[in-house]
Length: 571
Image (cartoon, rainbow, N blue to C red; front, side, top):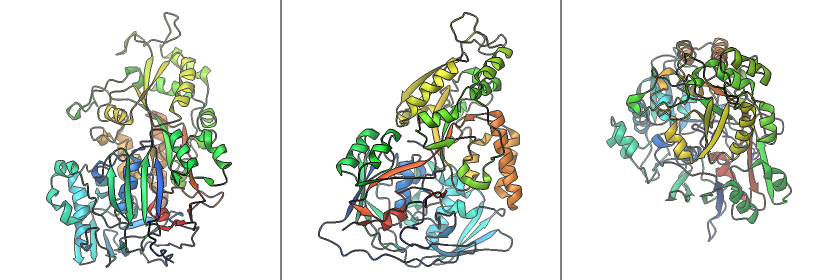
């Protein structure tokens, strides 16, 4: 499923007694490394089933979850995050920040090498961060370097990063800024088009795994990096295999053709739990479903960037969107479409983000009678008695029926069930909604900045810090392809800029809550639910999978680097 942002935040291993802790000064944790088994004649291969496939090997084009997973396994970042949300060293052994908060100094692992044998140095880090900044629109990466003023390699393995303003969340920025080898990428410095066009087929990285083989749309194979500075993975290889549908994925797990699957229809959870060789794991997630309104207009349409802006004009009317929100029973969607494995949603900041989540806000109550009343009073009447309302006089869509199309990526397995419920509820208030199931790439092309849709069903997964997920509603993101709604609100933009540099924690929480209030009030999205993570693996093949403690809010994500570094064959 295309989630458009990072779903890989599970980064600690409690089950193997891995104690990873890092404070703000970057103290190096004590890590008890398991010994890798003696190399057998045949390599130890773990097979992971995927519902999709990476859209690119180039981090600047890595929009899909499957692509960002691959990036994280092959490349390093300066810091990582553990189960509890604490940062710990990765490529950086330790780090410190100056009293004024403007200079961050990172001491790097001296033994780190690129997969082609070239040593990793501070020059690589300086080049990467400045390149992300200067390229401006290099996928997700450039957004994490906005406030970097300069980066200097002060010694061979020490880098100093100067900011233009103190930041409350700088570790959360660099943890997703994956470090590139300067000797490979330097020819593209200053040339965004060339950098984005680079196929990056070799994927020369310094992470725990090395890319061995990549068959587009079919599978890719990773081999354990024997020179990885934090210890070679226990297993020898991981093969990620794409499957055409989730049912085939589940059957492959049952048959033993796969060792772990990343997604499954919730309808099979109960039966899989009855298999003595399979464990179904559930845990928290920062992911959520969203129903996206196209709010683009003649004033906001990014025509020069390919904007079509064909959305139904009635959806720009707040009354229509609010009436539609009152006609959505989120709990029933959770129960029917997700079989209870989710919680009703509110806004773009998921509940898993703790105090950043505005739990005090009151959602739109499920009240179809109120929704009908609102539309009646706004002049949207069914004048011909066919059950579908028309736009009132004076509107751009005067006389046009409220008939909208919701585009749904085919890899959202619950999409048809959700659409059936929405069509029923919105039909009861005189709005006809037709679901249109399309290939994910087609939805991507229609989305943004094209805005060639009425509504979309899609999803995001937030970073641990809310800055990135909040950024997608900035007015300036309308032409970049990050905004899905063309929402434009100067007050929201002001609050976003202010919270990004606010050092007082309580004040920043208040700002983020106020932004969520504006989102709920203006309703560019309906967020029906926050997802639970559900994954499954065979316990007769591998052990040591890191599972969240029961009742905790720990993230479950079994294809992250530390999971795949430490799982071991049962024999």
